[in-house]
Amino acid sequence: MLQVTVSEKTIGSKSLLTDISLWVSDNEKVGFLGRNGTGKTTLFNIISGKDIDFNGEVTYSQHESLMATSQEHHDLNGTTIEFVSRRLPDFAKLETIIRTYPDHMGDDLKKIHTYTDALEKFSERGYYEIENSLEKLFDAYQLPKSLLTQSFTSLSGGQKRLVELIAIQLAAPQIILLDEPTNHMDYLAKDAFIEWLKTVKSSILVISHDRDVLKNVDRILELKDRKIYSYPGNYDKYLAQNAVTTTNAVNEFSTNEKRIANLKEQIVFAKARAATGGPRWVTLYERYERELRAILENHEKPSFWIDRQSATMLKPKTTENYEKFRAKNIHLHQTSDTKTASMLLRVDKLSLGYNGIPLLRDVSFQLSGGERLHIVGRNGVGKTTLVKAIIQTWQGTTPDTLISGGLIDCSRSLAISMYDQEIDPNLLDMTLHNTIEAIYDAKSLPINEEQIKRDMANYLFNPAADRDVLVRNLSGGQKARLQLIRLLVGSPNLLILDEPTNHLDLPSIEELENALAAYGGAIVYITHDSYFAAHIGGQTLKL
Image 1 (cartoon, rainbow, N blue to C red):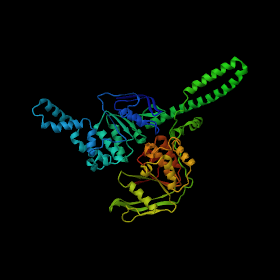
Image 2: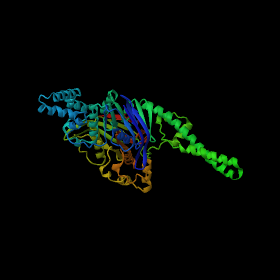
Image 3: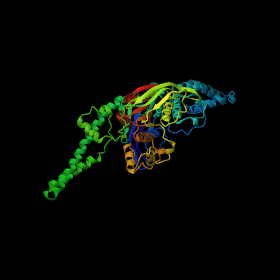
Image 4: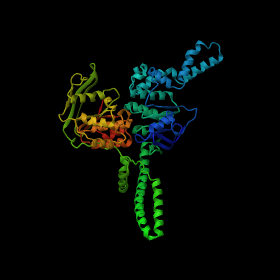
């Protein structure tokens, strides 16, 4: 259905993609993953035709239709229904014929045939039922039906992404490109999406680090070291195959490293002996140099990553080599004084709402050091309202959503830090360097140039190249890592996490999970990532 070859794609002086080749078969569901910044979205833009500045070719039949989700939306005029309608194949053309031809076709047989053909196609494609179809999908994705008649520009970023996905589902093109489609979905919406993914008769290439999505694909492509690697099967099978191929690559790289070190020693020795030892040592010296050049020509360290479960099964020597050479992951702040068994937070018979109308009633729980609470619920049920009320109380103000009493009791020792999905707008036009400095200043903590560089390096930023980049120009993954810096600066003993795995790649998600497992304070978290929830564990509060 789709064949893509990219011999080279450069951005500035940087070669991002080299000798890329991929295909997607008829009705095949393919997951597409890779570390943040490797070029996944760039490759999607090439496939969809948004980026034509590359060497290579994208091939699919002219009889096949291709649709892709977009990070930006420029065709924003009109209502949401009109936005969706414009995305449907031939909708505008057919609708114009049906609306205008009765006024001028008269007895013209050709026009009458065009008109009746348009009526048939409009009916066959379900366009007469477009509003009913949209309402059903809006229900599935927890979107208010009132948005249908609103201006599309008035929707939030997450709502626009969901509406675009709905438009693609209604259009049912033969080839679909999806970029992180579940980032703004609650658990029921995600279930609806996954069910559609499994049953739709289209070829799909989906960028995702959502393990629930990757568990339901037919094949996984990984973009690594500017190359594409293909793994038959779903996420679990990918992990098993990746462990084998990475183990072999680690051992081969380690063997070459040792051979390079030995050759360098032999070259030094042979060169010294060649001065007085005759032609034999000259020949050896030249042979060693040729061998060294041949090895170095193809000796570039690959990106090594093995999931934590597979890594526990490695042989000791392989484990030693893997730890020595593996890809660098984020290194989170570890606070040393967060462990406490005392009660940090108690919520008793709490009711919250707006304008006197309850959104949630009689919520009760308590948290001590080391405990975890998973808040579960559909979008709009009050998860964020509850979290904001807790933070307002901790800050010494009465929540404006409080209804009919209820209690939020914060310990005097409570120190909260919250992970938000959205960056503070006041930080967007600051450089990364100044933002990190501002994060420390906001918590009245000392900061110096050395600490800022250390934080950048620990969270996979380049202290030299990234220091002056504006926060608004960071990628989604980079913004997520910046939020992690802000989360763990200081010594919080209660972390509140709102969808922390959005935009993080798989190694970074595991690194976050490992750090949180060792964290001694309490954690309240909101997530629709079932893998993340299973790893963090704790009580569940379902709203």
